[in-house]
Structures are given as structure tokens and as C-alpha cells.
Image 1 (cartoon, rainbow, N blue to C red):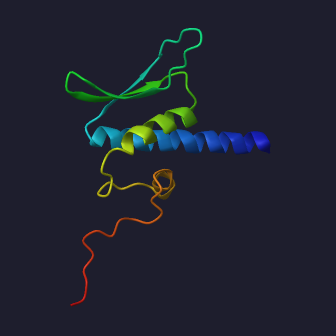
Image 2: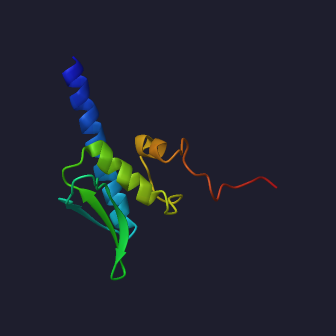
Length: 108
């Protein structure tokens, strides 16, 4: 049973990674999964940067889906996401428990 739960959890993390990758691309990022080189005593995580005017997110190909998700959330947290649809699980990652109600009408 524990193995089945781990598989379900891993699949959930992979689905969230794919959702956030798609959102990043809609926001103008190029998302690349690369084998990031490591040296003794140095840990590479991936992250966002600007390369010749192009917004990039590098994900470590060997990282777990959870670690890749952390990188995507860290980068996308700097973007305005109010007008971007996020699934409820993705919304939780950004601390948004309810959809934005901007533009709601008020009775006068």
C-alpha cells in the first residue's frame, strides 16, 4: 500500500511540474531540462535567469519532481499570476486558496 501511495504522490508531483512548465511558457519563459554539472561540495538546483534577453528556467534532469517543482514555484512566484488559471493544487503552492476576484462588481 505504501508503494502505491508513493506512486500516486510522484504522479501528482509530475503533473504539477507539467502544469507549471506550461504556465511558465505562457508567461514567456523557455523551460529547459538539463543535466546540470556538479562538483564535489557543490549542489546545483536549477533556477531562472535571463540569457541574451530570453527568460529561461533550467531544471536539473536528475532532480526529483518535487525538487523541479520547488524551482518552478520559486521562479514563478516573482510573476503576476492573478490572471493565470491555476489548478487548486497549484494554487496551494503559491498560497492562493481561492481564485482572484479582481474586477468583481459592487452594488452602489
